[in-house]
Amino acid sequence: MPVSSSLFLANAVIDFIIRGGPIMYPILVVAVVAVCVVIERVVWWSRMGVSRKPKRLEEVYAALEEGDLARAVSLSTGSTDPVVRMVHHGLNHHHSSMQGALEVAAGHELQAAGKFLGAMDTIVTLGPLLGLLGTVTGIMGSFTSIGSSELAVEKVTGGIGEALIATATGLGIAITTLVPMNFFHGRLTKLQFELEAAANNVLILASQHGFDQVAAKR
Image (tube, rainbow, N blue to C red):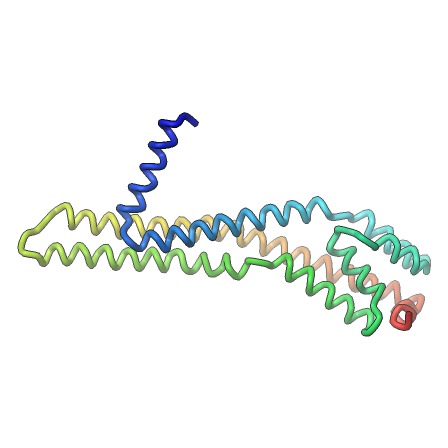
């Protein structure tokens, strides 16, 4: 992008913020936080997608079905797949039941996967509220100008413009954050289902050979 175009775009953005009134500054902070959170989650889920090893999980199942606990533990050691990591933690439980160990490991994986979803939910709610506050302050400015002895059309239109800009910006932040938030919620729900299914499979296979008791005594 040419330097002149960059300067024009920067000046347009600054002018847009100024015309939106003082409430645009907290809205801008919310927008920056939203962008950072969305980018961080996109990178995290992308890395998580690359780290998935469904074939390794099937190999662990096969080892457990054959009664080879040592091989199942070896196959799951050091895995980057969150489901396989949970299985490894369950197979190596020492101070609790295998089911409890699997639940704890699944909880850690879901906590990492659901990180910042609460912040995104807050942003979706806070953005329109800040925009509404900007609407109120902008309209108040317009009515103040109307009540003055010298009516300035620029002040009235400026107040209305401030209200519209703040509202549009707040709604824009909420809309652009809501879409990825729902996407991440869907991925989280899918991961939770996969963790629960894997935990149930491991418990069934382990109970057939008494591994749930053996591992606890090791």
